Length: 301
Image (cartoon, helix red, strand yellow):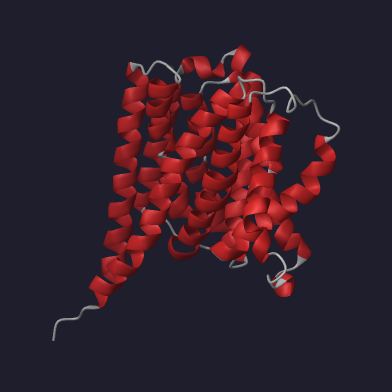
């Protein structure tokens, strides 16, 4: 009798892979639109406030019925703050200094390295030779795409901000998997935690919200608050739960590829030869990792 188990296994994995792919698309657009946003009258604190207030408004009908005793308070803090205002503020300040394609490299290109460390230290998840080779290839491709000018003195502050953002985001991904947060949990927890913590801080930060262009406010509110903070975070939590932290981190490492293309189209940021080489390297690295993972899965089956 022919076993249909592999077919069902692949079918069950299709939706999480689709979710991870959707995250890559939304996150690439997020870096591009954030790069645009921080060069309008809106300041980083304003965009952060719009992001979480819009998300909270959307999920508010479910706040009273959510079982808040499900997790401990510190777990809510880790998951909420890990993809919350510290992450966005560091990202926005970094994007003031560095162009979108390079920001995608520094934030998302470092996630496979951080994800691999976390997966090995906390979850004891083994990576096989082909998968480690994929991680190394993706990291090298991201460095090539960044180019030598990314480490110039003018960009140093932006580098520190964006690497800090990548570290904080790794905390969120780890917490989601470690404590088994579902996408429904993330959907409500992130805006509640961040509005509660950031709103009092916002009053003491520089702001130009009252003088900003209304179209910029609407654009940032809809993309940051709904597409990123609701749809993308839901997909991230779902993908992590079914694929694991490392696999999702590798998907996120392809964000620089799409970001560089979007920034070239919408922000007129030039796409030069070494960035094209980096794009190709990222794509090959992801394919290598996926092939290694599927080969190991077949050997187990």
